[in-house]
Length: 64
Image (cartoon, rainbow, N blue to C red; front, top):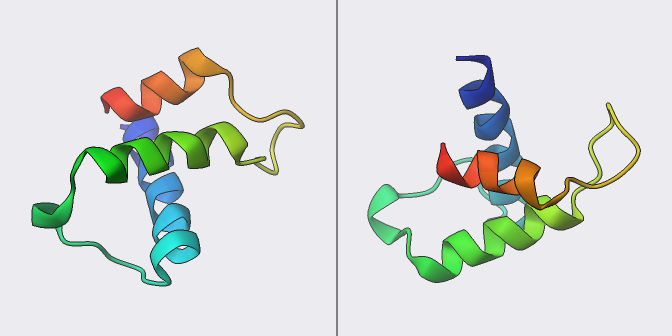
């Protein structure tokens, strides 16, 4: 469950940065949304570690 909550926090940060919202309609999710979220994860620098996520870390969040 912890991994789901971490992914949820990243999604909320992504919504706020990209769409200036706290929420997003599930029916509007498309390939571009997922590709943009992937780019966000690659470029995001979390406070708990110095480097951005590698590809396997990003994929773990995309699979959830």
